[in-house]
Each structure stands twice: as structure tokens, then as C-alpha cells.
Length: 183
Ligand code: IMP
Ligand code: MG
Image (cartoon, rainbow, N blue to C red; front, side, top):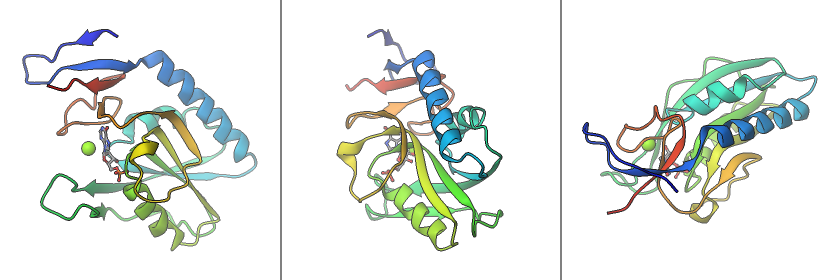
């Protein structure tokens, strides 16, 4: 696969993993499946910031049922000072979710802790249903039991960037998914 050099602004090197065409074809399929599953209903998309933004902006344009959007922020501190299982959720949800169909939108599911904490939080709000859609899933890294109804791509235990996903807050603007090159 083509290797992409990091630039002079200090980006570390990465290589292409999923190109724009592949991602967009898959996003369209997900949108069609979601539209079919919720026919005759409406949906509240709850995006998990910041990684969801590019995926969610694309996906929502292929969902044909009425949609409202909401965001929640999540930070995990795996490599920081906090305990490994800490997931800090910020930002209140202003749309009442009681009786609504809720779809949590994630850029990537790794251990599954973030998605699982958010789903539990939403369940307490008594929605009619709550499901998860993620662009990328790393099933080998899951540490909690999490049911992800819609997934774009399943990947291995590797660190990826772009299409909203970051490494140290950079690379989110890349229009494709890349894999960091070790070393
Ligand atoms: P969790 O482990 O499933 O709770 O995922 C926590 C968060 O870690 C995700 O929402 C992402 O923000 C981040 N993350 C996990 N794996 C990757 C990756 O490969 N690239 C970029 N961010 C990642
Ligand atoms: Mg991150």
C-alpha cells in the first residue's frame, strides 16, 4: 500500500488504509440499512465527539427518515493519569430522549467502554430504542460486552487516524482512514 510521508509540521508518517471511495460506498450502505430499519419512525442521532463528526455528517445525509441530531462528548484516559476504565462524559443532551429511537454514532469502538457508558446513560432516559453505529470497530480490543448493530468496517488491533479520528488531536481532517506507521 502507498506510504504517505508525515509533513514538515510534525505529522508522523502513516499509510492509507481505507480510501474515500471505499468509505463512502460503505456509508451509503449503512444509511440505506438504517433508513430501512426505521421506516415510518424518526431518529435521534447522538454523536460522540469529536471522532464522530465526519462520519456523522456523511451518514446523516443518507438516512431518509426524519432525523434530529445531538452530541455528547467523551474522553477516555487510558494513557493518562486516570484509571484505565475511566470514561468521562461531558455535555448534556438537550433533546428529550424518552420514547425516542436513539442511534449513538461513534467514529471507532476500541475497548467498547465509551459506547457502553453512553448507552447505559441513554437507557436511563427511557428511549423507545437505543442502538450503536460505528464507522470502525476493533472487536479484538473489546473489554466489555457491547452490542453494535451497525458497523462500517472491522479492523485489527491497530491505531488509525483520519476521517475524524485523531492522534494527539491531529489528523482528523484527513479525508481517508490511515494507519500510523510504527517506528
Ligand atoms: P473505547 O476504548 O471503545 O472506549 O474508545 C475510546 C476512544 O478511543 C474512541 O472513541 C476514540 O476516540 C479513541 N480511539 C480508540 N482507538 C483509536 C484509534 O485507532 N484511532 C484513534 N482513536 C482511537
Ligand atoms: Mg482521540
